Amino acid sequence: MTFRQTLDFLLHDWLDVESLQQRPRFADHSRETFTSVMDTCEKIAREKFAPFNRLADTEEPWFDGERVHLPQASHDAAKAYAESGMLAAAQDYEIGGMQLPCVVEMAANSFFSKAGIGIGGGGMLTSGNANLLMVHGTKMQQAVFAKHEFAGRFSGTMCLSEPQAGSSLSDVMTRAVPDGAGFETDPLGPRYRLRGNKMWISNGEHELSENIIHLVLAKIPGADGKLIAGTRGISLFIVPKKLVGVDGELTGERNDVALAGLNHKLGYRGIPNTLLNFGEGKFPVRAGADEGAGAGAIGYLVGAPHEGLRCMFHMMNEARIAVGLGAAMLGFAGYEASLDYAKNRPQGRPAGVGGKDVSRPQVPIIQHADVKRMLLAQKSYCEGALALELYCALLVDEQHTGTPQASARAALLLDMLTPIAKSWPSEWCLEANSLAIQVLGGYGYTRDFPVEQYWRDNRLNMIHEGTHGIQALDLLGRKVVMQGGAGLALLVATIEATIERAQMLPALIDFAAALAAALKHLYAATQAAWATGQPDEALANATPYLQAFGHTVLAWMWLDVAVCAQGKAGSDDALRHGLLAACTYFFRYELPRIGAWLKVVETRDATCRTMDEAWF
Image 1 (cartoon, helix red, strand yellow):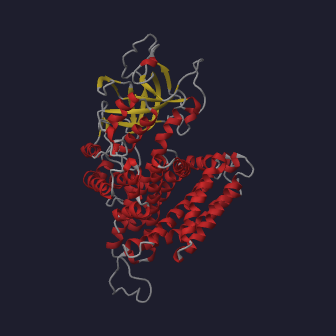
Image 2 (cartoon, helix red, strand yellow):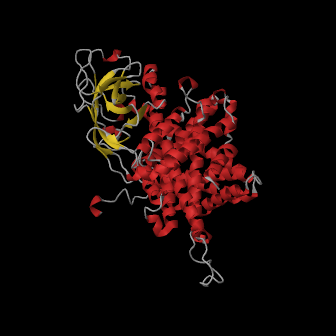
Image 3 (cartoon, one colour):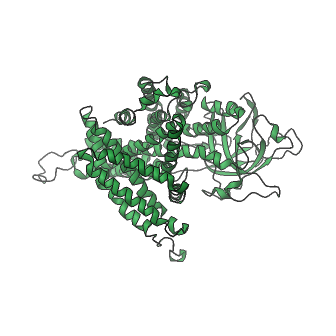
């Protein structure tokens, strides 16, 4: 089966996206318009991204002291993506958008992630940056910055981490001080001067667009001149690489944002990853119009002071779902490559009678059961992950266009699922890439085939936009206990609704029972983890909890997809049987893993917590 067939089934048969056109925002759309968008993106990805994926990996960005150089293919891909309109796909018609449902936008973007995730300038960051400004920025900030990001003139970044702080945003030291006595009257927003360093900034320096709009977390000093401790002191600022007038045109003056160096990565090599210095004086900018203006990079406050992290989470949560989609698509790319190889590589003979008869012709390795096991594992991981990301995207649409009650329900469910949407594909579609290498054997470990690059690219996804461990702490430490456990209760009820439907289908009764037992075990382990009320005891095994929680969620996705597939008998039997086989694999080979993970959670096992550093 092709990826497009699977994607179409999930969108139209499983999620019934055409029903969204009954809502006023999507009334102009139909299956035909959705198909047209998908066709366009598939074509651009095939022509502008896929042929240059290896090129972007081997010709890394380099800095000549003045500018960062990228292959021409990266410029062409970025231009083609911008011209497709996908940067503003879900935005209003009035600002050049298509008012596409988020679920269709995400499905269309999957083609680019699968064809060349490290090429083309990182449209996800630009869209996310602009989307944040459309919610938290002023009308002027939206017109001057977001509108031009959507049009592809400007690109965007998110600047959170710092060399000394890493993932600990409480320890951010970048400082923002008011730019003179009249700093609050600037039409682009309250104007500040920023000084500090930011690390791991994707697309922090390049020339793929006219300008780069950095969204920067920094702290405004208190009355005593000291930075406020913790995350409550963080504010958010727009810091453009080049200064911009109120008409959106460049003023010709460079802001004091300087590239300190490029990070040389294991994968994702086509995207410049940077260390940026703000306000070091390399590009000194004009003094403020009012007395008291100081040195530093000019930044414009977004939202209220000290509300920066709350605003940034709008982009971070969007990025986490996009990371999950990217991980799923890298896994899918490896699956397709290893499937093609397995169909065409003759080696060995079938086990059983005559299996040792070397006079018999060799058979394609796909005929060997263990190769089928590795392919089925990849299929179950990647297609299950894709289903999860599309389901989360549909929740976004429900949150924005549903009734007040449905919107509130979708928002709470999405909050619960976001750590899984980011972390599960990052871990298990990376495992799919490892299995793809294994299918190819020695050839998979060479650069003659793309599967080694897919693994290298995918390895980043467990780290960026919140590491695996941070997602685990968020899930067990915050999400499952928030609002008195209301989010967990809603998720349990939603999964139970799928179980009830599956119990009506003889072929799925056993799977329904298995999922019910897993759900019960997960809920009990959650209660046991917090039985003593001691966070250090509960959270010491947060990562095994995340793994068990994720596998339970993915079993739910597969059971829900299987219920749909069972009702489509005769429509596309090969596709339907493939989905049901992947579901069967997941329930028989994967779901049983959760027992071991949950045992250390429910017993609050102290092995890791009490390990003395001297014993290592």
